[in-house]
Image (cartoon, rainbow over all chains, first blue to last red; front, side, top):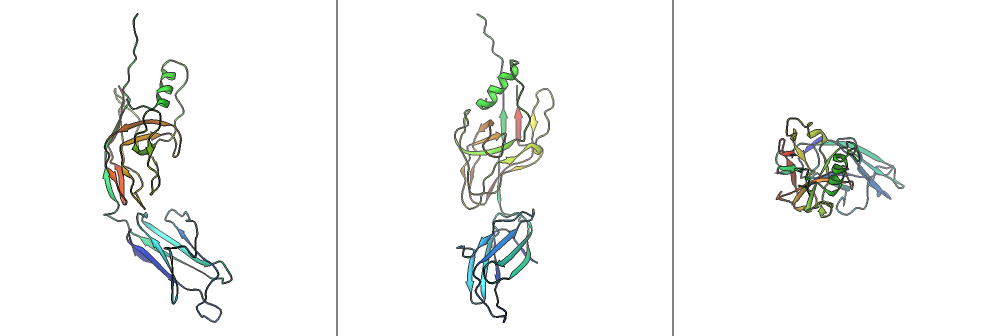
Length: 120
Length: 131
């Protein structure tokens, strides 16, 4: 399992192969991220600009860790077209001591009121 | 006084014996770039990672003659991501995580929250007073 710090863009390289082991294009691909709290992000489907890069060996899925909570993440890459293949893995995002930059403020809610009676 | 119209109406109904105060619900802090005023107008931050933050577990029960409540844990909004929030000029309290009723608000200079910043009220720095 790889370890990252928030702010980095992770690249997950993968390829789809045919029965002969040759790299093949899948009709459609999607990536699902499992967050540390076990919730699932919505599937990211190829092509999604900025998140999939085509390489000579297959594809690169790019995941931006900026401001992501620390913990263990899971991912599932799967072909959802004619090519049927799936791959799963995990990576870890470490807690950053620097980012995000906290802006500290204080607030006082004052509910001062008074009962006003008028003598006439 | 920074109670909303909603709270003022409920409070006066209670103090004049017309109705009970509304049932207890979780309170959520909200940040505004334009003050909501008593009528819950203004402009609440939206997008770029913003969400109201639940604060009930950060606030102990009132005690003492003045009934002051002081926060006992950090209250942190989500970090801004994907863009800036802008200058925060008011912090309010709602009875729901979205929409709902504005309970009260406090105008002030809470700084500018840019992408990657996290608006945080440290433990002991959110104070509720009444007199």
